[in-house]
Length: 76
Image 1 (cartoon, helix red, strand yellow):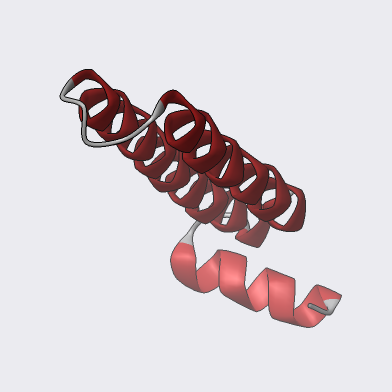
Image 2 (cartoon, rainbow, N blue to C red; image 1 turned 30 degrees about the vertical axis):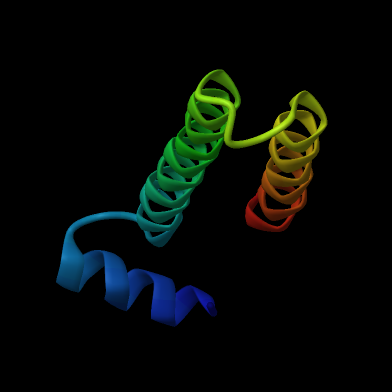
């Protein structure tokens, strides 16, 4: 944004655009971490009940972790 656009946004919204962007990024990261925990606990439950092997649990959790790392890199 140019200086004029930033000033207009701040005058209209009463908040800095960088703060809005930080808030949106924080919400997205929180949702991604909840999703990752849901995947990990779901796989743990499937392994405990015998519906998945230990390898499946590790592999699915590792893929979710890699995806979280990549998305976190793009969000920063």
